Amino acid sequence: MDIENIQNDYLARVEAAADIESLDAIRVDAIGKKGEISLLLKTLGKMTPEERNVQGPIINGARTMIADVIAARKEALETAALNARLASERLDMSLPAPQRHSGSVHPVSQVMDELTEIFADLGFAVAQGPEVEDDWRNFTALNIPETHPARAMHDTFYFPDKDAQEREMLLRTHTSPVQIRTMMDVAKRTDGKGEPIRIIAPGRTYRSDSDATHTPMFHQVEGLVIDKAIHMGHLKWTLETFVRAFFERDDIELRLRPSYFPFTEPSAEVDVGFSVEKGKRIIGGDRQGKEGGENGGWMEILGSGMVNPKVIENCGLDPNEWQGFAFGCGIDRLAMLKYGMDDLRAFFDGDLRWARHYGFDAHDVPTLSGGLSGKGAAA
Ligand code: PHE
Image 1 (cartoon, rainbow, N blue to C red):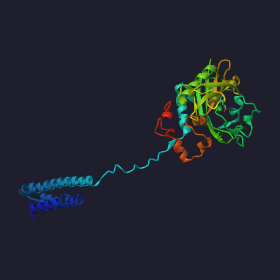
Image 2: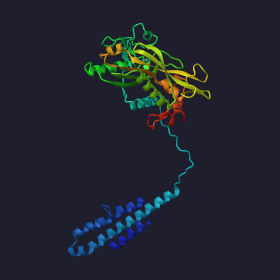
Image 3: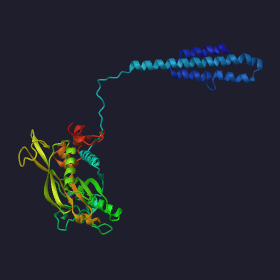
Image 4: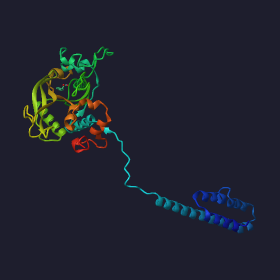
């Protein structure tokens, strides 16, 4: 067969190729490694120079022409395939979107983030301590005498065995041992000289107790400020600033009631004013502080006081030089008051319906006043 016939034969086959696969088969047959034209090209080497001068351009020309035609046909086939797809595929915008099952942030985590943000703005660092604590840091160093009811077995989860250093171990009953750890660290680091402290310590706490407002595991946030001239005015301002930022209202009043904690002197329990509007309790408002009334009143939210000099001394710091305030507040209760849940036990049941209803969008970056304006429980 002469080269022109071969060439025409391929051109006809390319023209007739209906899809990319058959086109590729033709390419292999013609100009693939062992293709017909490729084999012809190899014969050039055995020709005389005269023959080669004639045959070379002819065979190479055939190769180029076939390659070009294949490329053009390929493009045409591809365009046709794309057009066919565009014509056949339709988006039905009326179909329901697939359900998005993203998790949600637990209200306790949300509230911890919120209060950490607020106190960070006030210059507080976050301190942590272990949930398995020793009896000395949880009680003794905090000036809680052996006879204090908090030490009674029915409140505290004790471990049956002592640890390697013969210490009585327990699940911490409050976050106050983090005060001890923080002050002892400072005393150690500064060789007993001391330095200003401003920390909060949010975390889990445990007491053997269970009803609508108590669970065996719950959350507290501790606050501790130590400096040379810290007084109760600083305590009140700090708590007022915190409570107003947290509940996102400027009209919230605080009441400090004299109280007793072994580790603070003097001690105060702190109440927030609430009003009843349309049958619902809200923090702040016109009716707050209306003692005993149906319309408003005071609600206890935390314990506080000036750190007892004995506690400062127990930690290895000089109580004649350093003084400050501390407070401890239930986080779960803060969440209930802000976001309107009424049974604490549901916080830890792990019921997905509850978590979806009260949970927060994980995409929301917590901000100082994140909760109420964001998606959250209100949505
Ligand atoms: N630890 C106390 C409690 O759990 C709260 C508290 C902390 C009181 C710090 C005063 C100072 O009830």
